Length: 246
Ligand code: GLN
Image (tube, rainbow, N blue to C red; front, side, top):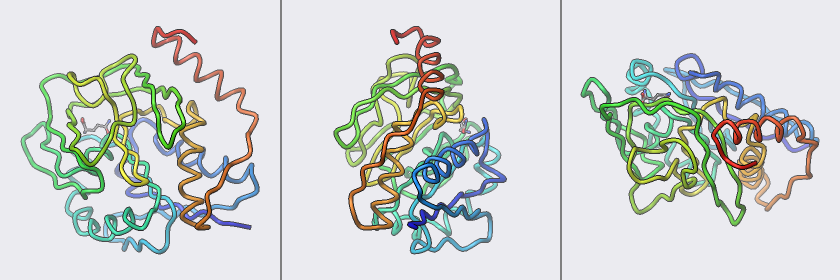
């Protein structure tokens, strides 16, 4: 039975808005299809070994949480970059997308170095960007809507090597100007969407799982459809709450 090996980075520090729920969705959607999975928590002082994983997850956190892990994350950065170059799937959420870039200049003015797996930088703005959000994504030729909740002071600006995860249909997105949200580069996805994100967005969950399985098996995988009625219902309620047509 193929096992997908998931690294959960700093689960005790970076888990604002129940982002741990994303791990449950990833493991369950693997098990429902006959795959096995392992989840390894990697915290401060733990070694990150790229060859041990197929998927790396980092949840969101307040500025203080990001400061607490920043030095340790910088020490892990070379190994994390080589994991991205090796085609591991990454899902880094909110505080995660900020630390996936070059740097995050936080609200207190301290500059946190990012690991550099997404070509972007983040600078704290003057207003907190909060609320329901919906975006239209097109990744690997698949088009779908992604819904969630955002709450960040950081304003993120993409460089030329990363492309947006989607176009903002409702909400703020990366900043208050360019109407795009998130970032995609190699098999790395960064996004501001909390909720947790994946229970209401099965298509995005499966995209990430196909990347992780492709890394594990060196084959391109198409996952069998699941009965996603509950997830689709929750997704459609969130779309409606964002004032969009179902
Ligand atoms: N601390 C960061 C900000 O405020 C990220 C917040 C989060 O992860 N929700 O922009």
